[in-house]
Structure formats: C-alpha cells, structure tokens
Length: 399
Image (tube, rainbow, N blue to C red; front, side):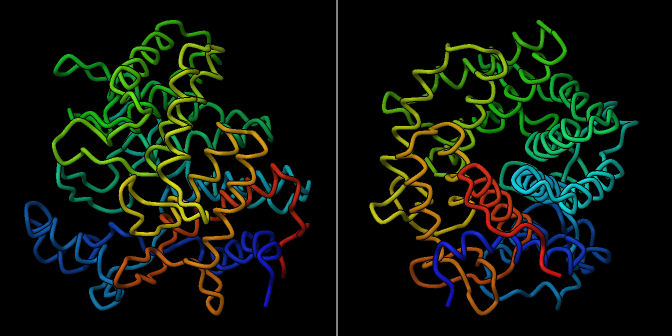
C-alpha cells in the first residue's frame, strides 16, 4: 500500500492517465438533461420536471446515466482545470509532454466558444442544459465561472508559449464579462453569473471582478479597473463582521460553504495582486481567518458548510489547497493544506479504483465518477500543491 506522501505525488499522474484514456470525457453532476429522453419531450427540460430530473441524477448514489442515454462528454471548465494542472507539472519538471497536452486541449477549447454572433466576445458555457432553482440555462450559454477558468488556462498557456492565439481570447473574455454580465440591480453593482440574470452571488461577481481587473492591468483599461473595484467593494460591503460571506442575496442563498468562500478569497487576492492595491487586505485576512477557523475540522476534514461537515466533497478539498497556498502562503497554511490532502485520502479516495468519490454523506456515499467536478479539480490542485512545495517526484507520465 502506498504511503500518503506517495499518493500525493502519484495521484495527478493516475488521474491524467485515466482522463487521456477516456479522451477527457466524463459525466457531470448536472448533465441529466443530456438524456435522449428529452429529444422526444424537449419541453419537459424546463420547469419542475427538468429540475427534479437534474437533481435526481445529481443526488443518486447509483449512476443511471447509461440507462437513459446520457453520454460522457468534455466540459470546457474541466478542460481548463486540466490545462492549469498540466502547466504546473510542466513548470515543475520541464517535460514538454505536459505542454504538448495542454496545447492540444487549449486548441479544442478555442473551437468550443459560445456563439460569437450572439455574444461578440470570447466566452464559454457548459455542455448541457442546466435547470437550476433560480434559472434555466441552455447548453452553450456562457457563464462567468466557466469563462474565467478557461480564460485563466488560455492566459497561462500564452505566457509559456508566447502564442497570441491563446492570449487574445483570454483577454477578450473580459469584454464579454463587462458588456453582458455587469449589472446594477436593487442598489447593488456586480457581475452576474449568466447574461440576463439579476441574482447577486458573491463568488460569481468577485471572479468577474478579478478577471476584469487582471485584463485591465494588462491593457491599461482604467474604466475596467473601476468596474472591477465597484463589484469587489459591493461584496466587501456585504461581508459579515466575522469575515464570512453567505452564498448570495436570495432567500435560498443564505448559507456559508467552504469552496465558495475559497473562491471569494482567491478572487479578491487575484484582483488585489492585479491592481497592486491593499484596499481589500483587511477583508481578505478576516475572511481567511474565518475560513480556517470554521470550515475545517481539527483532523483536516474539509467541511462543506460552516455548520455541517456533510457532504464531504473533493471540491471543498481542492479549493482549500489552492486558497491556502495562494492567499495564505505561510508555512502553517501549507501544513494545513497537507493535512487536508491526507485526510481526503482517508475519507474520499477509492484505492482499488484509483480515483476520488463524488460525495460522502452522513448515511450514504455517492461513488459516481465525475470528471469536471471531482477528478479535474484534484488533478489541478494536487499538481499545484506539488509544484509549489517542490515535492513532485514523477518526471513523466507512465506509458
């Protein structure tokens, strides 16, 4: 049996090999509406039936997708995460096999942009219709989170390759965010999750602000800088005295969870770094302190909610690794990240299948293999951790 240290070093290679074997295609928690059933009854995608169908497939511990004709597919956000991980491995080893794979995936992303005739600028959405409680999003309609992770991946690749075909769409995505997502509603100024949606969600707005700020700093766009600051200040204004953020403004958004808190902190850190500002430092420190005090247990368990550890989820683990190393950056933060990683091996890893489960609840475990939600995040976060802490052992992917 491999030690925890060996698992930490080898898991990215294992996940990459499995992903390549499957052509980076996989299932997603929210892909239920890709069922062939809806080619016969497309109107049922919307409304209560579509919502219930989506949630059924998301929550079931048994994967019924093959039975209902839901096929594994590539997800643009998942591909972006794999590219970011590949570039970390390239940075750590200098092995061009990683760079070649990242370039191959990035070229695919360039062909999967949302309809430019509608949106005018580079942007990306999911590969499935998405029926959420607050809205229905058709396949391919862009959203801020997918767009930003793809843009970050393309930008990072452009810095390594010096190829403008990756740089230009990465920068162009900020124009989509400003023109289609900047919103003023009910006294707030923020970036929406999707075009036309007026719900205020902190992580979506802060990520939009962060990427607009990044592009503003690269291009000298002062008006974009001011929009980014406005949106960030909105979330700072609504940060609780204890440093926490609820998910968003609507009544069903009044919860505090781990990975969205991590998103908020990482986005504020990126914005502050891009604009060379200390304006948000106190809020970041207060938020990070809350994050470490209330969203992890003593043994390193990453909690889902501030008041409930369940469901245990590798998304929470992966974002914790990234947040602690990017935002915290102290030795204590690195030590906590390692404790969180090791604890996840005990609670969420399947040694025989050599992958992580989706979620562990109090009474049952959901072992469904989700590529975008779980394995892609693990690949990126562990590759990042290994690169940043110089513990990466393998120099090449196994044959």
